[in-house]
Amino acid sequence: MMIIEYIVHEKSFATSLSCIDGRVQLPMINWIKEKYNVDYVDTITAPGIDKVISDADVESIKKSVMISVSNHKSSHIVISGHFGCAGNPVSDEEHLIQIKKSVEIVNSWNLNVDVIGVWIDENFIPNLL
Image 1 (cartoon, rainbow, N blue to C red):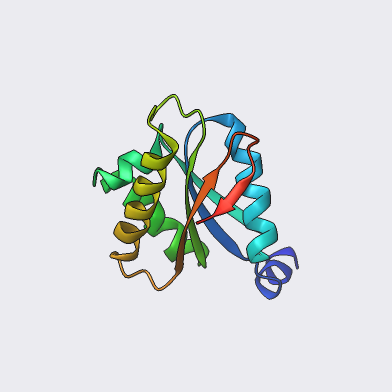
Image 2 (image 1 turned 90 degrees about the horizontal axis):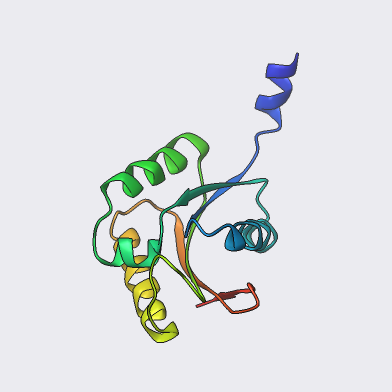
């Protein structure tokens, strides 16, 4: 009976590509769930992920995104960068450039999902770019 109930009440997903920094995880998950009205957020992390993607070092990240989109039917991919990132210690302006480039790269994978960029400010508040 539980399996049938789960199938009938399928849950929705989005995917967060974010830094490993624990300070950004909950703000991003909560923001994504509220903004896109999804039940769950798959989280793919790397130190300074905006730089990692914008530098096209993406094979393992792309594989994880493909699993999220294919198996969980993730409807949105949110790429974030944040203030005070130890893994990518560049200016806020450089982060914004990297996030926007990362969005372009992930969009080029033609996943048929909404790909957006988010800047997490010094108060750990996500801001849509």
